[in-house]
Image 1 (tube, rainbow, N blue to C red):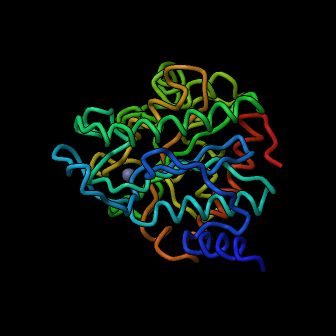
Image 2 (image 1 turned 90 degrees about the vertical axis):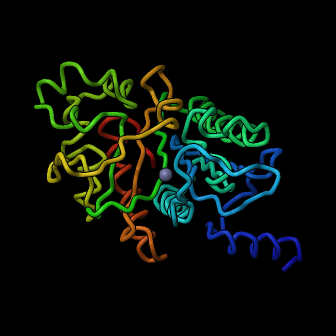
Length: 291
Ligand SMILES: [Zn+2]
């Protein structure tokens, strides 16, 4: 095997990505990478950065907890989509520690006014914009998934659409009547033949399709969000790159529990189930075939 290819494969193995993974594009800072793809799906991972630098001060404002295994899960999802559809999603990863930058917050909180941290933040969002443009150049619409890890007591995927817990507890008629415009799937809600309640918590919602494949999820037909349940409903990434404000990709934040992400086997099982769910989700709501 030629040395260059051997080195490339070693690099990929070290990173945990699939053997077909192309060279990523890298931002000037060196801390953000973008693996372009062909599917109308964009995946980002803002909070699993393992790298650090003395050139950027530690953040003093906001959460700095790392999302363990989130990047490995993002790559497992990429591999599962390639295996199922023969095409890759777009993947954007921030490799810099959340102690230095939080790309899933507005820049003032996320970069704390540090110019180098701001550069990383801008590169991350520019790559997601590039990925969205690449999707919309080939397809009429697409889906953006922001991948995170949570440590909440209930081991279920928390699917966030920017809707508050109080919204999710509304009866179907009220959810259908007024809530879609506040969500990161606003544009999809106008295109799907389904009701908004179905899109958010029905059998063919992301949560419903995940749950039918063994991945407990909320919202979904079988899981309620109780008043005492902690729940992440999504943040800056899906506000900026979802369809609440404009007709661009529809978006959801996926917060994955430890039991679905902690080992390679669990990540593969989770990713395989999500890939299968996305096939149905796209054909039902996007009226697009991923195959
Ligand atoms: Zn996170």
